[in-house]
Image: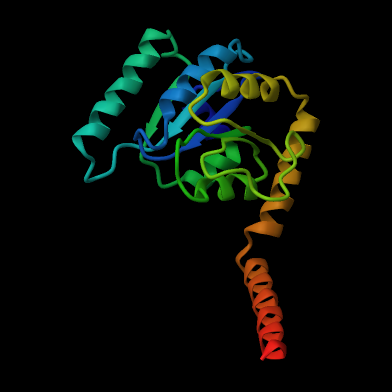
Length: 207
């Protein structure tokens, strides 16, 4: 963890914020970069690390989007705070080293990266790109904010950044419990079987 934090330039009491996803309009890192700018200042030595690159068969549109992200970082003067980490094969270690995970996608189904971040007990902030999961408790487990809204995402970043470490850990633990209850494959399979059994019993009785 210390090695990775040093690699990304996190120093002192700085925070490591992680985002994982290919550089693509769907993942909307542009909103995240603008939200980060709005939420400043962060503790000295903090970094936003964007893990991912355009896909190996990336389209021209994705290539242009990646260039746009770099240009926006320069325009906002965030060169020392935003790290383009590129493709990595040590995402689990990066999540472990991080303090927060932020997901900024505009649209998609249930994000695997979100599940991995919750499982790693990271304080989570995400957009409502697939809705808000049933049973989620805002601020207790993390935050969901409207997609494509730098102001809303920035406000959540600022709120999370100012949490005491103990509260941050508590949120991470609550998020982990939520993931275990709702996304663990064994639990989901048991729930599916139970519901299917009830359905079949009702169907048999009606026949």
